[in-house]
Amino acid sequence: IEPEKDISMKKKIATPKAPQAIGPYSQAIQLGSLLFISGQIPLDPQTGELVQGDIEVQTKQVLENLAAIAEAAGLRLTDALKASCFLKSMEDFGRFNAVYATYFGDTPPARETVEVARLPRDVLVEVSLICGR
Image (tube, rainbow, N blue to C red):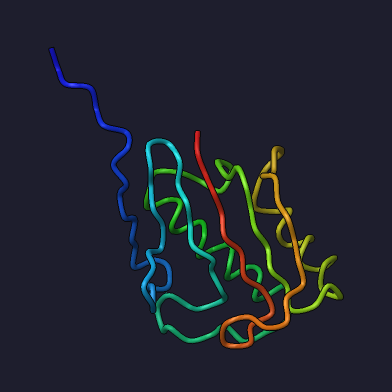
């Protein structure tokens, strides 16, 4: 009889296809079938530099970074269950949504979107995800 797999073991997920963690955190942590992806800002994973541009450009890079991390864990953005979205300005909400909506298929995750006083490196957007199947 094979021993039961311990689903309580957390596993660090890391990929060079997304910006490297620059502090005491992981790109993502997997626990069983759930994946908790740290907040991503619009950093180019190849250069480590911020992607310059408006809310659409920055949102696209953030979502590409999230997709790369999900993929490293064997998941896709369509497996997203919960999104936490942080905007520098709610004036960007409609344009943010227009890009965001193209990434999650017919069953987008539950989410909240809030305006915040400031984001790391003064970016316009940050998004974190919880994914699972």
